[in-house]
Length: 154
Image (cartoon, rainbow, N blue to C red; front, side, top):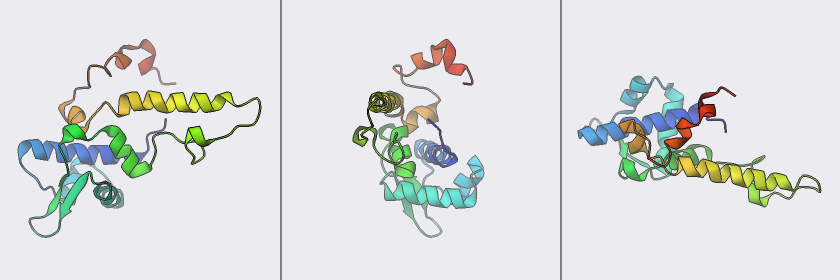
């Protein structure tokens, strides 16, 4: 899986909003999110708009306006943010893996791609924005970090 800059920035923006919610300092101005996380202007504006369209973020214009999470950070998963900004967690050439018909000899690839999507879901649907903001992964995800190969750069 390749995590795009857009997804990374979107998760970071959501984490800023989670911290603001916990501190009671919402709404947060887009400029503040941008500056705090060093997110390029165009990325930040587009990301916040997409998160708003997906119902993950709300906004209000004006001097006392800004952005805030539309629901508790504990109810927004990393998978939700990815789907809001990039679409499905796993696709092959823009199609859902289960929808692809492979020619004879390559049919087994469908199972590989569906299994890959399932493994991504196991982590990305378990980790919430609140978990990231707290710096603590859920118990069922932490064992993946203990795998000796997890930190290998391949």
